[in-house]
Image (cartoon, rainbow, N blue to C red; front, side):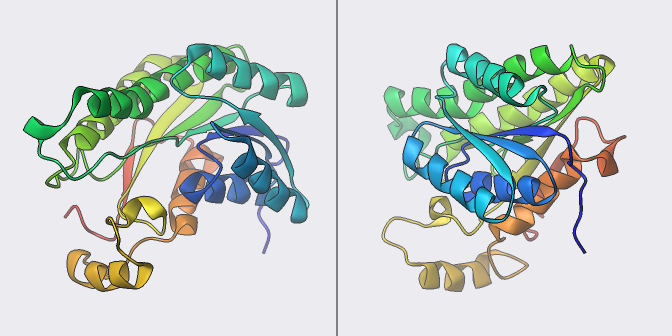
Length: 255
């Protein structure tokens, strides 16, 4: 049975050229949203738009770097100019720099991780809330954090964990400050999912599957569609009284 929870609404998804971001964009479009897909590289964004349009959906690609405030302001403006509003935003863009204990992390990698994973979410939130609070119906925002950070730690991922734990704190604070503006803000914290980011250097998908049988209580990675369903729940009216939540989707890895 088809669902139309987002009919007539405009959604923005950052990091939508692949992985979870693409899955979220496709899922939103399948439920009636007009989707603006944002990312740093044009070609994969155009591929996402093509996938949306093949199923009868409507999408617009917009190149944007989440570390640049002007880019985030521009993509929000493009969404409103094209479709008339911004009703849903999913801040998914992120990077991972892995493999070194904290004392061996160089400053460039640290800044790259924090600039993208934390400051990028702040800049996106700021631009999105500024638009949504002008709208009679407000809006809903979902930040994509991670189970690594506020929920668990992994050796070699301390910088990443710090950035994602901060996203959880940022989400809760922004949710408290802006629910009075009619803007609901929540987070989803995926664990290992079926994306390239969850592969260790040189690891194949088959090798990852064997590893996850041991590491995850569920015994496998989450599919990107499973993560997308959690995002859509929080963005929808089904979660109309959910404010400042951090929904962990990781097969029990953080237990």
